[in-house]
Image (cartoon, one colour):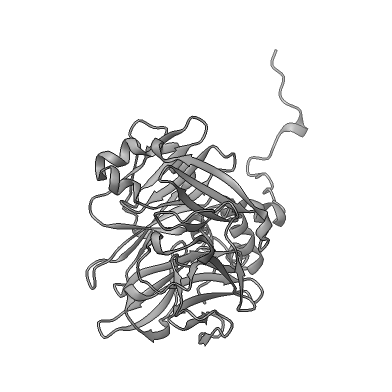
Length: 401
């Protein structure tokens, strides 16, 4: 016999359940893990979410989360008045996973969301905290800067106008944490100057070492509010010639973006002979690294574990370049291949995989440290020419101001 339910279990026909109210802290935590594109859509849902996503503390929290998944960034090189600027974001995790697949390739998707309809931008200066610094120029050699956030699709007005030739410029983009502003450093023949997004003016850096007898063999590397340059002291030639250089001439200049003062650092003590190709600076695992080739046989990577402490240089990796030859030699020939330069881009947290770029083709190579295997990742999209950006990119809500 079926009995009717108790009265306490019965609901009136028009009665609705009470809405679930989530605490603000939980909503903030969940939203901070979402991609920027989704957050931009959610801002339209209600005023409270729009207010939350726009608050400085949330922007900082979201950037903190996003920075844990850095991206390898490709940009197209636009022809004047023809193409728009495109940004393609590929996570390093995806690059490493692609090396394990049969195709060993990544197919780029045509996403207009990350397209900048500004044909005057000809160069990517760098990226920092989700902002891209772009260089624009006109045919009369008038140049300017733009600051673009591809994720929010916001771009600044033309700023910091100056003159010159784009191909001869040495610009570095970074963040001054002490003043919460972004800066661009421009190396000059006689020193350097800096543009601040805060006051929007160029200033000369008085403490920067005069550049007439310093050959800057690497573009600036920004890391945690410091810009690093690898230089050859008392060397005025425009070409790198290992036969006319001694090890003692190499030095690292660090420029503090907060104080705008400089400091000289020595390379690792294990850097004992001048390599046949230029050494380079890079960032791996949030630390400054110095890489160089030894006797055309090994790529050695040193890591500075404590900022500014020369004694903290330690050897991080030593890679046998013979392992790389199975793809490089067949494309470029043995001699040209071994004279090429390798730039490390990313080391996985578990020390399993290293992503590098070779200057011959600018395509990422994944080196598996566990089994000494190498895979070259093909970037499939034949419509445009792409240039990589050596700086990490992490999506953010940072304002271009």
